[in-house]
Image (cartoon, rainbow, N blue to C red):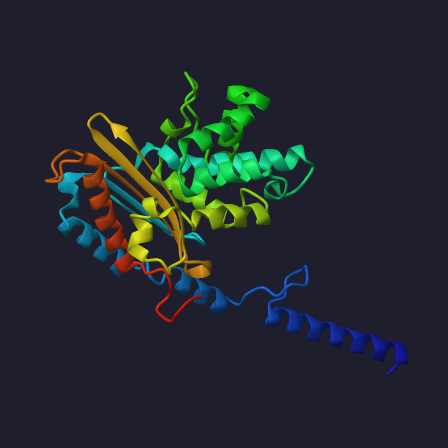
Length: 317
């Protein structure tokens, strides 16, 4: 056999072996190793391990037999952080954002400060005063502090411009059509959304789609350190040692109250985003409508925490 022919056959054989190794190893075109089908199936199993058909049925059964809905309207929406089929329960699937909107306000503010200073991370250029205002906005749900952040953006961009920057955060999370009321003082807490919008927003935040990595960590850290006064609902149900980053909100509706919480429970592939709304109806034996609503809210959160623990059965991920 001629030397050139032998060399060509040898190179061809080497090429076939290389292709075989690539295919068997699952390497992608950019040189990174893709996951095997088995690994992907295992990952999907882990993600949805505690939101199975049985878990969904048990959640529905427990919520129904609890009689909580005799005391008001309820809405629940749960989805794995990594995506996949969500679980929803109850008639109350939309309502006002109340103080939960303080999370996108802070994100919008950080993005503005980053851009204004030619930086990637807004959290790295904040003054001591700005840090205090942001901490009070998230940890203490302080309306004055949130309004101050909003007003600072409005001074620079106008009221509609400030609204637009907050609405852009929703757009970045894949939600279109959520608009802040454009009358009076632009009461951002009365913005309406769906529970599914709330879950999408928090999933996008957790995945780093709304802010830089440093700013994302900054916001989530504040959300995991909510003041003791406001640590009812999800935080109370999951306990002090479970990873829970959340924001709550509430407001009057005539003589009754609306209450809402959205939280990221767990972390990594074991994480879930849980959103709850409750509207009191005055039927509770507890005469204070807000206290009654909070009591019902705690009961709902406890049922969810029992069915969907913050960490996998085999331990933390």
